[in-house]
Amino acid sequence: MESIREVCARCPKELPTLDLDFLNRRVFFFLENSTRLVDKSTLVCRTKGCNALYNVEKIHKLSKMEFDFNKF
Image 1: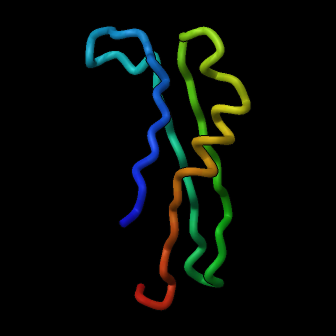
Image 2: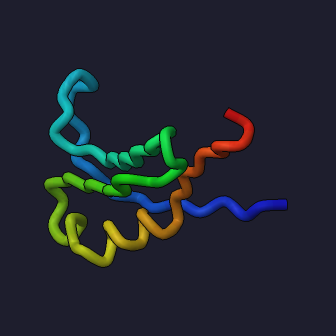
């Protein structure tokens, strides 16, 4: 059984339509030669200390985005 890991940014609660605080990860895969081109994590939060590089690195390490070129 896989353990569940959580990272709580404790972002301030605003209207749900506002994107003032967010977590984003982008990975681009190049199908022509089966390579990863970009792997970038972004954390934007107005809570003091939340945007620390340590938190971004922790989130990046704990999240996983893979693409199986053989199955595609």
